[in-house]
Length: 418
Image (tube, rainbow, N blue to C red; front, side):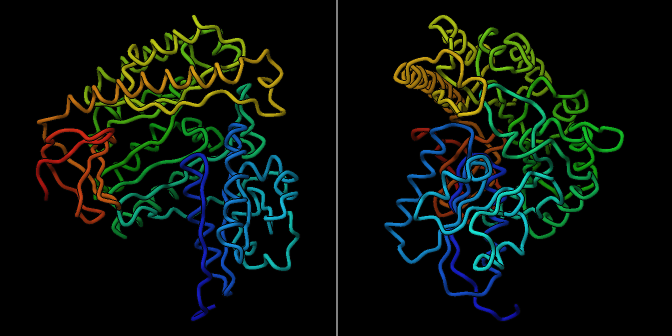
């Protein structure tokens, strides 16, 4: 309604980058509904039992700190375990992943069923938004997953894999660049499966090359997490030939031991992960890799875990995202022989320490170099390879070069300002 006051809406996001994109979409839809009641959207993740615990903890904290706010729980946790959140007295509404995508849902919270969770059917993709000032646009190109990793419940929360149309993606990115975005980030649940359900089954590399060709004014294109075994030849060529495709990839590796990978039902081997990184680094020497890992997966011995530790160096990884394994009810891994929780946490701590050593070595190597960075909110910027640089007093959305004077923890320190 034109001229209606905007509702005070806060979105708290757990989990993946796609959740962050969807949180922004929901926040905007809720704010467009007139009403004085403050609203807090808790967008949950169901990847681990720990993620679910943290979401419940956050809900209780919100109720204590903001007693007048309506708490709406949504996301993959709400989709897979709606009854758990519905049982919490702090929760006003529980929305599944289908309901949360519809603007009418947010316009009728008072009259709709308290629990609105339906099977995942797919449907239209959310409009992309510039969610970090006028710096970076996150564009959903894919949703859902057709794979069945034994530790993962996300296919139940997101449904089957489905892809946004190539022309629609290009048009969205073009509009975002016209609106001031300097960088577009392609997001999805299983990004490298993009195109499998479209006519002709195009691959991710074809989409990347089409975007770079059709939007010449876009300064940077970045990919979020990918599955290395599904990378196609066009994608390799794009990294080799296209300077505007940023030299950074986050890989879903999960483990470095072949038997554990098999028990996870992953589709790559240790050797394939190492070969992928070596091949891409030969084509793009400045590329930097991050990776997701699970420590303490069922049946993992110390020798098996040691092979995961070694993979950090063998793949040349820089940014690690490490989870201690926590079983998710309803997954095959939850029925496997479990590693003691304290052992899983200790292994995760060691793996994070190995990753921190790799990150510090990478940062030290940048000292004295000149880097092109894109500034964000909070006095920080990102280099082309996603390295964090402290740039206090620089407004968001500025693309510039600087010299690196040193490092401070996990970030570089600039010697020069724009």
